[in-house]
Length: 526
Image (cartoon, rainbow, N blue to C red; front, side):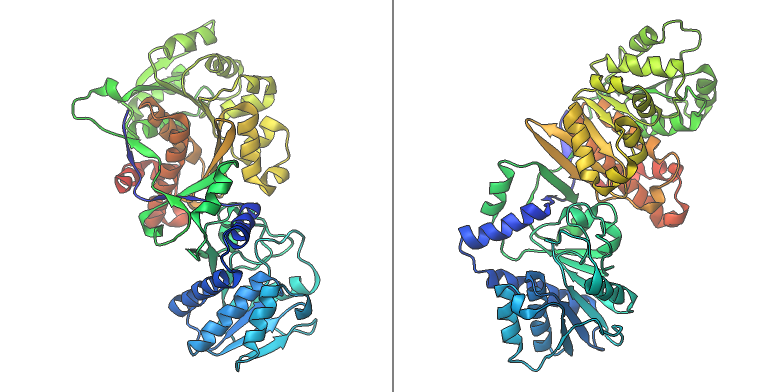
């Protein structure tokens, strides 16, 4: 079925290693002077401060002796030229600085900018309207300790607006986790492209508003990476498209609606749910499938659940499994006329539920496995051997821990790696739900990972995952490709959550609010 694309751009998200490669390739292989890139980076930082911050009370640039600090020195010089009162605090030994740092410091010495040198007696950072964080960039590889930890804590205690260069100092570029401690920025100005740490785990809280600036990295450098490495990317909405970086217009597409069509055109999805008496979970999933365009939804459940749901969702078709001696063959028969299957919401973990999961794993239909279906995979790990490329699993961190035996701490420490490892090991599509949802799958012989940036804390509520499973099932029923359905589904789900939060605030969002916002989310996309 043809699709209509999201209005926006696909932007690649880089690891720290990839970001360094881009920088070095442009400098060493293409001959772009590093000071030219640095000047453009500094102009971006200064421009944001001039546009967004009220800096009449003065600016403090806190700079280490690496290239991140050199960016800070250059930004301080530009801001001074704009008429701002700027003070520079250098932490570390300048004689051990990078060549770029020493160049920028030498230029600064010919200006009237006050330069101070930090030691353990640094006082609190009071009295500055803005603090520029130019301490550590994307290359940090160890825990922040001693003087540097003290400086970061003092920045965080200040009442100043904090602007971080490239990434907040102390935040891991690849995992989004603070390395001991990290700067809590109000704004982060990054260069070329987003980094993983900006958008996953705690990075979303530490980075504040993120601005991506094109400083002259060449597409040839990106192409060197993308020929051989795993791809990671996100989709920017129209309002985000004033950001720059290496983008394409490729994006996930909604199934097109045809005037000459009927309910069969848009497919039937089976929702196998509610065996455990949780009729609400089955309802959220089934209705979400309808709201995403599925032509028919067949709910397969216990008779008690179907009796309740008939009045809640009269549009659905119902079949109960009560009295069936062979659940597996019954399930296979009931889904024989369906294009896709959702299994798990409110399913329970009893014998009938286990038999249903085993039966679905034997099918060839595109399938979404959620909630109790995942718990069953966790308690019967040998079943994971039957996962396949057209199965989408949707675990949160605890569910993935049960499925793999890997600790929650290890998974949350690097959620991208955890999702990619599961998808690569089982050749399925893994949607790992966290503060930023990660979708990983195999594309030929390499991994492809989408990081979703829609959604908010209000979605951390019971039933939210059931809505997502229904959205995915509805898209699959319309013959959307599995990877495309997974990416588009989490995007729509997050956008519906954002729309719900506009009305209910992030404190008051419930699953029913997300469900009811699906039509508006789709309207925004098309």
